[in-house]
Length: 304
Image (cartoon, rainbow, N blue to C red; front, side, top):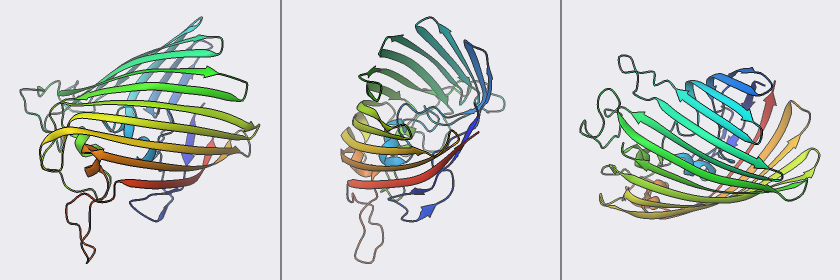
């Protein structure tokens, strides 16, 4: 199935309605048989409910990991209870085939109401990328610097209407780009970027099919960063937490209305990822501002 979404969103950093595609969804070309699937084109494959900063910050380790990925090929094979996914994303860098490319593999095992999932991804980033803190000693002009991403997760179907989910996300970034991409619009400017940032995020959630046409999703994220860039230029630790409630109502098989509310709070290194402080005239002071937020979104999905 090929799907496109046209959401309307409300952003904390920009208090106006935005009718552009806020999720970043893409429409891949799908070639499928009963047990094998190949997707060509742009792929968007979030692990849970991420669609804007308050509920997608765990996926900011790299803008292409694991979010939207241009010019990619994905394979899916099913072997009894085991599902195997493999992905290669082209880097789109003339003269250097490996730059910007992504390799990924994922295994999913299902037994009755239980599901276990494990995956690994690696992205190669040009050392000359904007905001990168690394030099050619870390990443060559051919292969770039690396960001490694590992995830383990599980789900259990308690009843026909209720499913529980939990997982662990781990990332090691040697490009210096995570500190840049983690920041919201209006965040204070950092003095540099970490050459070896490590993030660990735990999440837990549930899906509840309240009615045939109405579905709720609840999610909680806890993220811990090490060796992350602090506002004063040093490297340190930080914690970010968020909670999400998502409601989806289906008018038909092709059309859904959704609404989401999210709360987020950061400390330590994450404090500089929130919009910075302002003086009495309303001008930025490049200091830490309020580090807790509430985000809401509403939109319409059309699938065809």
